Length: 171
Image (tube, rainbow, N blue to C red; front, top):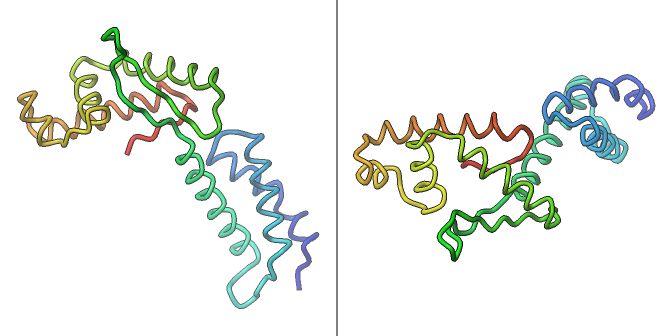
């Protein structure tokens, strides 16, 4: 039988490295690793389910998924896109962000959207902020539905690259 201390000694560094490779934040990876080993300490290892390593990394996988689910719930929600003066504006709400962080996220997101091509900006605005369907966007812009899908994909890719660590849910 493998003891908790043996599991901890053998796998802690590997767990932290693996989690960090998935979330790209060393401090958070260490916090998640601590949570993982708390779970492990409270759970009895069953030798019939496979090797200890398989068991540990299945817990790791689930912890990383849980992290991203929580992160998604804490992502920026966007409400509206035009200020009273007619300029583009967003009401960013985050479960954790203080007003300064929310403003910083807003600025980063607005800059990233502004760096998109004109057609990408129009499609992103219509799809995410006006909640229009892809076929409706295609009709309004004179695009094919496939072109709208490709434009959205390219825009999402560009935004993810531009936002480096600012998590924006692009469903």
